[in-house]
Image (cartoon, rainbow, N blue to C red; front, top):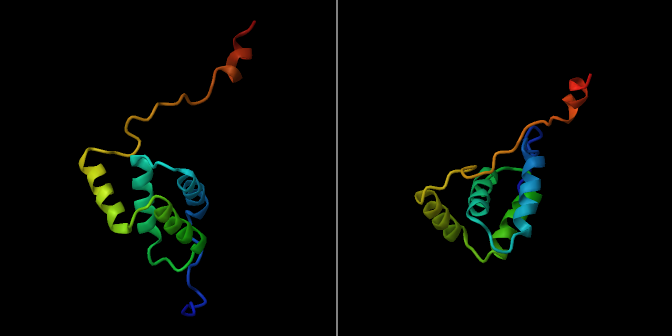
Length: 108
């Protein structure tokens, strides 16, 4: 491996949140459309990045576990997007906050 310059960025700013997502992808045996798209975008995000080798290795491992090549993944992702997939579409809205913290204020 080539020596990196001293000022090279090796820690990705999204490493912590991406780590959680990669762990979820590794645990998936039958990936959903959203998981396939997530794998594709993360592979693109970290392609050529000089650090985050743990994520890069696990992304490649996920491809192997799902029995896909990058070309096959890209083809499936293109088909998913062409079929109208949009991230978060169809997600169940979640209530924000609760009445619990105001319940005591309503009492006499």
